[in-house]
Length: 301
Image 1: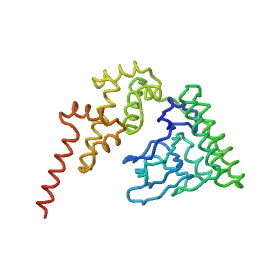
Image 2: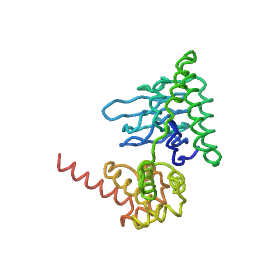
Image 3: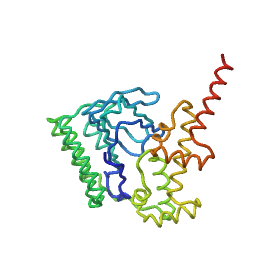
Image 4: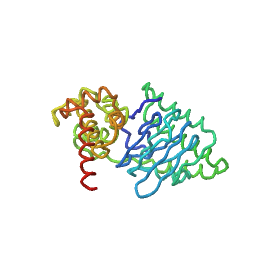
């Protein structure tokens, strides 16, 4: 598996940029607030369902692609946890939506693509370059553009004209936007907190956050201390524990393991930190919730 990776702060002149990339085993993804950028999901050897509250459910099988638009609430539930692998690529930028739309890739359901392994290799190449720190933002922007062209050709091999339109449109839409931020430190902290709230379920480390906002870990920790009185790691850990507690309130019959996996934490570590934060183990809390639910059910009956 390729661990979740964020890129650095994108250049304002980039109409397309890589936001994140990685792969994961088949597991539940719960995003009630959606995702900040376009997400390209690639299913390799597994099958699951994408659920969109109030909009419907779509099944995604092996060798298929599905693109979820920004800030659209969704949930992914795998049918099996045996061999499935789900790849994801986050694409941002002012032109991201129009480029994907023009390439014919924004559809309301998953669809198969030919040459799936080639597209998958593009994903792993992006991850390797990002993980090794040898790929600059401008280079990843070019790679993302090429990836979109490759997918468009895999989906509709004969539609050369459409690909040409995408190319000219991207070149015309490269514009320079003025930097309106007056307090870089405060802006970096706000973005760091937003990233943590968006990616608390992912394998997100503080150094990934620091890289994404353009600060060192030490400098970012100083900002967290100044504004919240804790380190960045402590803030992220408390956020995950709070999210887990809220999730358990909504799922009183869930297991401790499920709660830990929901926030991306190892089970034993999750139990220790949960008790330190709330004064009781999550198992005790689950037992208490189940007892309250039983009493409620008996009263209702």
